[in-house]
Image 1 (cartoon, helix red, strand yellow):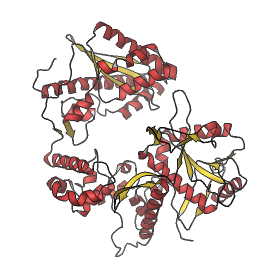
Image 2 (cartoon, helix red, strand yellow):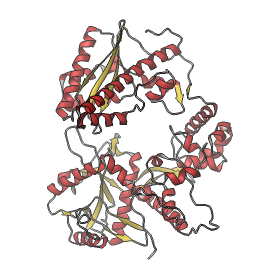
Image 3 (tube, helix red, strand yellow):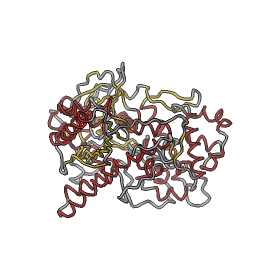
Image 4 (tube, one colour):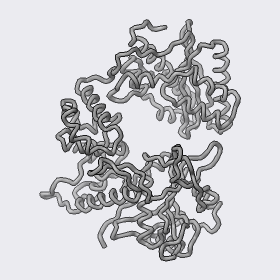
Length: 568
């Protein structure tokens, strides 16, 4: 027995976390280490339960082992139950615990196991399945690698042409590859190395479906020491990442606190740090001027940062002073896994110089910005609940008389019908405005509003919504495009950054933000006291009004950049 096992999440997670977990000299944090819990807290558990419950209802002969843990069954009992179900050839097994692979340092429990082609030895073969609350497919003309199955016939696979797997969702493939290796170790891996993700890729009005990926197909772009980059399969990626974490764990377990060698990995701030229980341990080990800590927008990835470290560049001050042209010949061969690595490095260097100089927003163009203007202008901003439904369409109408805010909203938990109704109310108003003012322009910041407008129009086929989408080409203007083409921001180019640091706008709320507004909406709908509900409603409306006024402020600021007088 080799002493330790890693779960399915380890291969997709930070190796420094693995090191801390197995280092006996480090005090373990109080918060749980299971990062999959974060996904559950964000609605993943509800989505997973919904999908798995549908599978139970629609699959004859399903074996559901999910309640065994709650009923006090031991790991060994749950493992034995899964082995018996697989041995009997059950068509679908939910919540099964796979036997530990002690030699491979693995343990795991996939959401489901789907009966597939038999094993090479003729035993029942299985494919692992995971449920994730996000989309995993995107369009690609001519693509033929994916397959699909419905929840009503989960083991019946059909071609899924012109769609590919979203590469930034690689993490779940590593989890599935982990479960595939466990199936191999216990003798129940199908002869075809397939795995499924049930993501939120449902068609309008439809239900989720399973996306099937061949774990042996090479389509994931990774770093290659000899070729710059190379395409590898999910199994190859997993084997590399899991093997590295086994190596890290083995070294961590050898530490005694006396004359230990330096750790085999060092902390680098990444997105995962925001919710990691180990951040309190890692943060004191990171220089206050560390590149990964200070450049948070369009950050360099771990390999890019490690490459700079090998060149003697670890801090913002060092990158700001670096001769980029001089280091490129050594930098580029080690970062070929990324598209446009030179551009990414130069962008990071620019941000480093801005940070070193105390500059937050910098113009990069010399030509006029030329934001279009109109006699009647509408600034548009929507608010969504935590389930993604649009409950508020806020507008600021600006003409020769000044600016007036109004909104179309429903402070209630929306159904598809009521979400369409409030959107259609806004659409009818907008159509009337354009009829009265044919030269009117609608301004928004990024495509969030137009994406939702089109989504609701396509789903409902409501005449007003469909007509409103026809206005997008000639009447809508995305201000973000003008900002992106002309400025670089040390903290990105979000509306809050540009409006406050460029245009000098100030929100009334001390904590403005989309996620915060979702909390306020919940309070406005669900709080027991009417006074609390009313206060939360007003807070949302004030925030939305400030958002559209901020868009106007940004537009006036951009116009002033060209030296032209502001229209108002």
